Length: 330
Picture 1: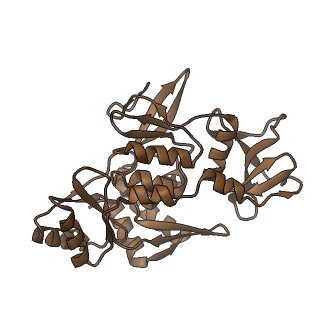
Picture 2 (picture 1 turned 60 degrees about the vertical axis):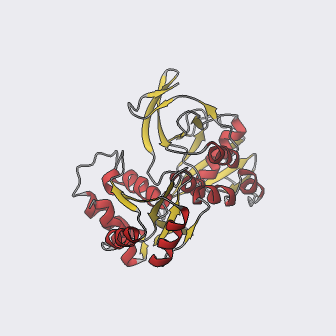
């Protein structure tokens, strides 16, 4: 049992947690682990995105009031040739025993394996169910009283996600002077927010620090017009306008690599995560004269990768990835 399992147990038991409670719970569990991370705030964000991506919880943000809500327990079919599902959603200390007992009745095998990579000890273990036939997974889900669909969630989520064009078309533009708050502009070339210089483009995505609430707010500017925007979509809007491609795909190994600093929007990140039921692997790669940090999703079918890329206004860049050494992207 990892600290990540304990974290999920607490979220499941609480069902609905404020950010303050989640933060306190995370910090207590993280203190028990020998985990290296740049800052506690970044670590919390990485783990929370992992929990959301794996379908264990929903992160709700109403007027910057962040809440973590446990998702219902569900068996998620993976988009593989073999009949494999993973346990997602809320989980209790008895869940693994219960799933194993039911699985054995249908001649299925259950494996609980630790996640791989950065902060993996703070993410729940991957509980996989292997079956000889599709019907066994469906029947076991019925006995466990949890939802199950023979259509992989990775495909469904990629289909129902909004597109970048949808997001852009629904922006609420207004003309107003720029906020007099500390701010940084997103630099599409370097995939990161940078300090504002003397010369700024008329189109830009800007991150402001609200001095009253000490939270970030994001706006896209086009000349004198501006509109609030979700930061994940905002980055991809800026990348599309600047003509930069950032999604790399290894067609041989079905690996999808994305710069760490331009995470996929939530539904698409969950789609990529639920291709394998595993968190993304960290990868440091040299592109030209500089090194970039990527995250790599495993077992992503080409058709899913293409839909994900199209949704964020990107085209897949063919490459060879090596997540074993963590240093190669050609």
